[in-house]
Image 1 (cartoon, one colour):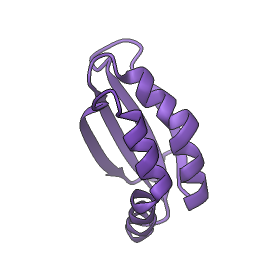
Image 2 (image 1 turned 180 degrees about the horizontal axis):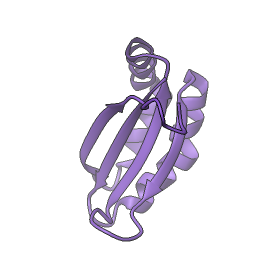
Image 3 (image 1 turned 45 degrees about the horizontal axis):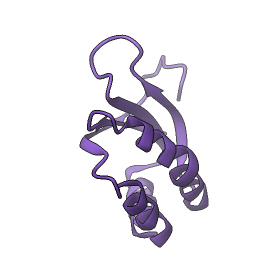
Image 4 (image 1 turned 30 degrees about the horizontal axis):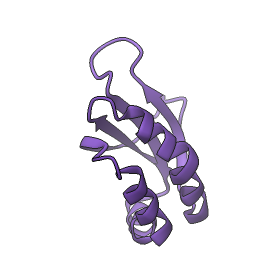
Length: 108
């Protein structure tokens, strides 16, 4: 298993729109396509109070490429993204890293 860590840096004031989009639109579309979210976090203390951190689990990079491409092309996702950005863009930046568990990691 590999894990993708994604960090979405929101434009100030737009975090509520991002969280609403995930909860009401993105997660049901992900479920339809078989994406496996591990968890979602916002920053309680420290730098990045406009950031949403989340992780996805993948069997392989090939699986990620296949599923992510289909998700991105889904008309339901494209509509949800467009509607959520009706009042302007939500994201200023996206960072993505692919993580491999160590032999001693509790999460494999």
